[in-house]
Length: 425
Image 1 (cartoon, rainbow, N blue to C red):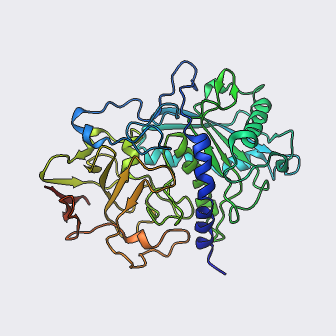
Image 2: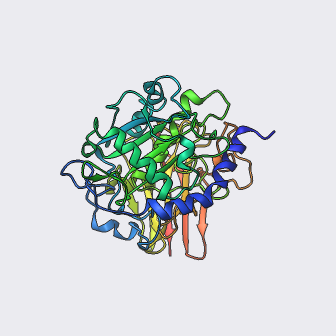
Image 3: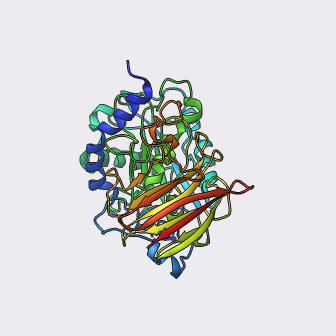
């Protein structure tokens, strides 16, 4: 029997074709529906202004790209800075009654999800989970009657479920008060996550069912428990929710048909199983959690040295971007063990390519491996081992000869910072 980690990655990968269909149908129907009273939901870094000098590094993609990595995030998604109120609804069915209390299900995800976002955003996202209905919200139809499947189109399966959820909750919930919705389904509804990963998010969908005059446009649905059998579920099982919420903030899936082969465990949008991990620095900039002063933009020919501080630590230079075109570029950041990055086994400078013209789930980000075919340095369950030692260390170099770009790690400093030299012809 294969180890659980391998089974899980294959289940994720096998679902990709359906995920792509799902995203095309639902996730990028970006709208401008109001989700928080009279405050427009404009998405992305709504409170932070960008400086003119960083223009070449704020790459963007065509309008038809699904959940583009471009900056700024398009309209219609939930805001990612300031106070964000998350409505949590615990749902069960006549053929799958809730196991235990609804609040026990809620406790599988909170306060861990809230703490994860506080740490990752350096306190810039004030994520406030609320559960005004503390019991299981019983649906009028059996789970089997909805026809929910991985990649099910919004019509008719999810539209029917969403409409029934809205009808059941609306007498007790003012949907205008919330920025996003988490539907925490009883785990006994549907197959195990080891067999089929049903959890999904509908983001920026202005055509969603309406409640209290607003479209329920940004909603994450979580089904079975992501339990890999390693005994770590109590510590890691919540992580499916920050992954799904990443979509409501406009972030794409980074895993591909090869599972975590393109990004590995370096972003929760790639692997949300197993040990804790963080967002990439690019995502933190995109979400408004980094100021432009914390991002170096190397757009002109020449040589420039940068002192990177660990991504897990607030303050300092966090990201260097080397644009390749209007839609793609290299990103450089320092990853060490700390904060949400508890599984870093080889600290160093992570180098990756971002392409805002590539759809979610099709590889918009590719991490470059400094130790190719090494097998990696981790043996933690459900961590993509090969890329675990991808960061570049002192004395190591990355080179793109065709474009005349070189990135060298020239040394470290007492505070744990790394010095990086970027050259471009």
